[in-house]
Image 1: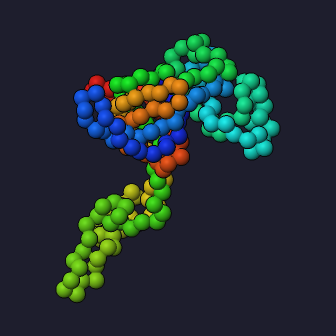
Image 2: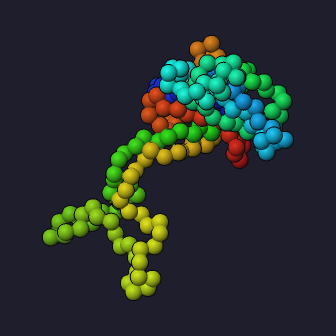
Image 3: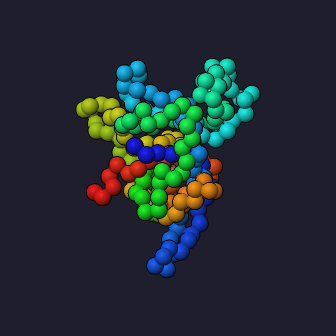
Length: 210
């Protein structure tokens, strides 16, 4: 599984070879540093643990600092895991750059969506509104929530008012428009979840070609 961590910088638009103008999201991706290699014999599964974005040492506790010092890399703000088939291909302290991807590759992007705070059922779940005139007292309230005497309760999972956004979102089958290895920048066609400066995880698409 190819993957890399990045920071969303924002959106812009570029011209591609055929002259079309496409919207792209600019992501500052990598470099990553391998902080731990996990094997099926020792840990029960094959994976690599990677660190991204430098962090100030005083923001780390002693166990965290010891983990990074053992890997001979500086403290990192973000630590994530990627499943791999051949963990022997990686070594602790190894640097992983953006050249694992190329223009034209299909990827899945994972991020945390923007938080909207507490929202009503109309905004949160796109429920229909009630009449606005003729004395109606029902405008933006939630609709019917359940039956009568049976089952005599509100069923779990009903669409109601509550916290909207700030949840893990995956956008599948996005295309890479350009990769700039020297500047650690990748241009992804379309929008990716999250605010500017938010962490995004880029992986090779699991449904590419389907």
